[in-house]
Length: 341
Image (cartoon, rainbow, N blue to C red; front, side, top):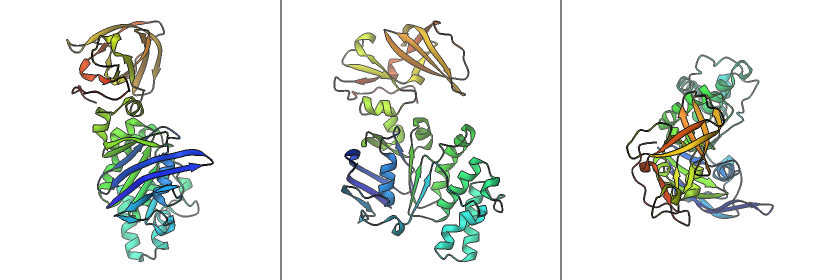
């Protein structure tokens, strides 16, 4: 199955929401939309769902034009960041509700609810009400209701955004496995580059209503087409430095991801920069060290909890194998094979 957007344009009250968007999503592989808030992700999902119609362009499902077919006539499931469950229904009845509306037999409902609740590890909670569940458990109920339908298209709009860190990590690992067991086309929107990397599959990068790059997730991450793609697919933001500052020829500027800026020499080819700390952020599993070198700010991301004080003198080590070179127009030049993600 294939879901395709062709030259989609959408404006609301004179403001451009989507501009000439062309993208394709297939069943059997996880499809991710990555972009910052207001980049157009939700607008695109709503058009895929049939909740909104584009000003121009077409939406095709298996080569059939569904642009003007309303949501209620499309076999879709939509899961939002603000999960929605029926408070007076049990977990079982919440999950089973779309099947009951569709007139599915009781025995089949029981079987499908049992299977999907087991996959999502909520099979021991089927008699409870949503108010008796944690936020993570309630989001699993909403996901189960989407999965149980065997919908042709499953759309997920930042569905893990309101969950705590541990639950997000767990579900990020589980979701691609869960959706492999369906024949649905899955499109998942997120603002988090790390989440997109964990989910894998294919990706479309959105910025200001435009798809700026698409393809296999790891290929897009390792080989951004331009500075805009590199910035969109990096958290913390990728470091950009004038090539002349690093004495690099044939490039206008150089990008290097914070995870590739080291505080210890690891390779004889490493370039050493003298820097001083301006800010240190402990985010939980990582520490972001912001420093000043070559008259510009640098960000280093290191695993674990580390303490630095403003003004501390440190050395930064950059391996040229991890450089992403850009020309004067901001387009990416040839990229060497890097040390890894």
